[in-house]
Figure: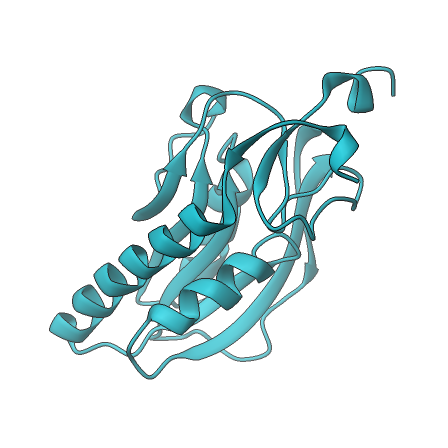
Length: 181
């Protein structure tokens, strides 16, 4: 599996260290506001990051999941589809949306808009990665692990055609893997 990786962009150790820092910042912000957040992981990509960061949030939290998609292979197609909605009402809740990567911004904008429409008091975003050079919709995460260049990355939850999510790091996928598709 590692033979498809051009180079490692973010190591597992760097992810863990940054998750501890983000967890401390999230703890401080929500504790000072006296808020118990509902932590919502966006399936499937956010799962490893959610599992890591929640260990470092020193608060009572609730957890729920949504499954949304806007990708076909390597390309964001802009059509955001809700495959699995939340199990509970978010009316009056403070949502902390956990995402693997902020890319075009389309998915997060639509999910945030939906959660606010459903009555969430607020929606904040924590993302492992941010790729601002690809943004087509104006949206920013409140907490960001790493800003990365415009390269196709996999690992730590990020995939290409549902593969490579289980890599313990963020790696740049070799172009020949996806270019001739």
